[in-house]
Length: 81
Image (cartoon, rainbow, N blue to C red; front, side, top):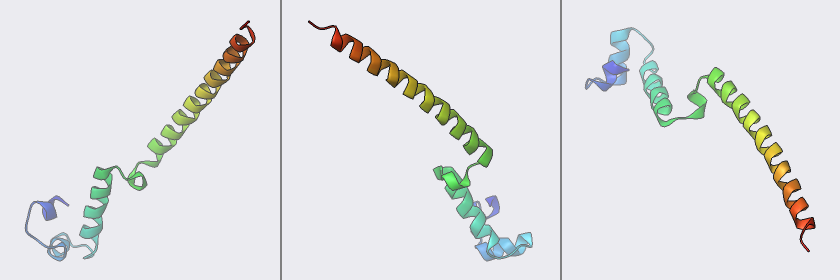
């Protein structure tokens, strides 16, 4: 990929130099661009799974906090004269 970016060579020239399929450098550059843009499809699946676990824990905590707040508001609403 750096060979393509740092030179004026075409994808086909880079592929010829590396001895790979002519479409490979193009797909490598596109994949690197998606990673740089934060495309979820290009993320590490283990990181994605960890993020999902973290978000599920946070969601559970927020639901519990919301229940407490609802109960507290109901309690204080019943105490008004």
